[in-house]
Image (cartoon, rainbow, N blue to C red; front, side):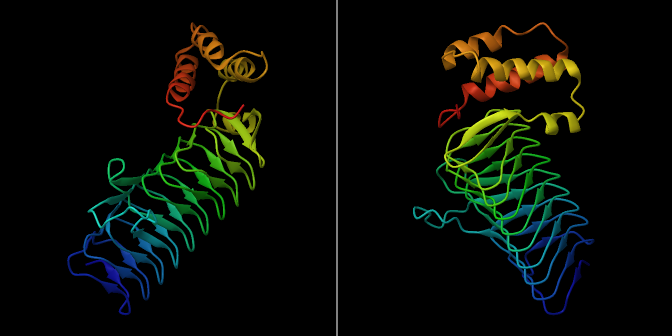
Length: 262
């Protein structure tokens, strides 16, 4: 049996692994599934059709799986899916999806989600992401792996943030931010390559040079976006990791929804 504090309210229909720990005064709804090793802090509410993976740490007062704050939501059986080994700190709000997309909000694995973070309906949050205190994602936002979103930053609905991107403190993110780049400010401005981030993740000199060249083509050579995309596509011929980074950039630019910050 899971370790459930006597003051917690857990619906008998909830599916909890035997190694799950539920803290005092937590409330767990009937459609909730929680995987092995996950701990749920005091006063946390987990509701809706929410699936949570293994070894997550959910701190006190989090609200997980509440219905979306989209006024068009009509009670449809939408979902929230959370992966493994995430840290979800105090007062986070992670909402169900809506039927405007696939009916699901997805959060990956190994993310560090600090206090008061909001992830709205239909977001796609990848893996190894850091969201600092009070970072807020509006509906339908996509965040790539290893991105960092600074504290008190707001991300407009439908914005895409690329893998390994860095969003600075108190940013107003109303345009897409390409992979490997750093942006901040209000209005948002692209600052530079996220060199600190990619070097911490072990990017070698060849990969760093290629990313610098993509930044130059996008932001320094006075090219139109179409011209920059064509030039980036012609950069091939390097190591497989470099080819993968170029493809990451090209795929992002092809799928940009609100225009990239330039």
